[in-house]
Amino acid sequence: MVKLKDMTRAKSGKRKAGAVMAAVVSVIGTICVAAPASATAYPTSTFSIRYGQSYYKGTVTWYNRAVSVTGAFKAVGCRRVYADARIANSGKRLDRQSSSTWCTESGPATLPLDADVPGGATKVNVWMTTENAGKGLQHFICYPDYSTCFGAYEGLPWEYRYQADLTDVG
Image (tube, rainbow, N blue to C red):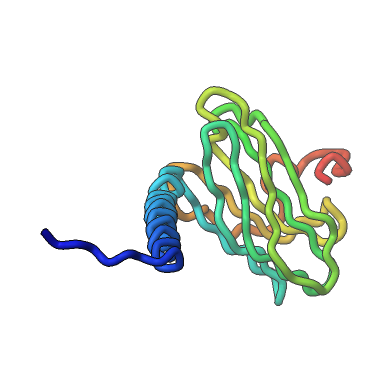
């Protein structure tokens, strides 16, 4: 019969800690590997607004009842970016968000949009203005079925071009 050597408490503790650490690493590895699969389940569309040295370039992510517009925003002079979520066939606006006015600064800009209707939003407008909301510089039109948004078009999205009171745009 083979007799095992007596293990000291230190060796036993190290082995237990090692086993626990291996289990934790295994669980974290499983979570990290699984996360990207769910992140790619939603359609995305890309846009790149450029006006002079100012830009807002990023991605529209289409969720079931929400839309997220995220991107890098650089304002040379004073600029604002906007996004609105709509139902394409009726033009009904579901939500609109804007950044604050940025003057000669840059950073990430996220515009979360509510689209709490069956099927969610089917169109998103993304645009840049000066500090004056009625002075549209450039815009893109995005649809969930296309990975690239349509544009760049000059001025405001057509839904805002003929409003008598453009204060509603901001």
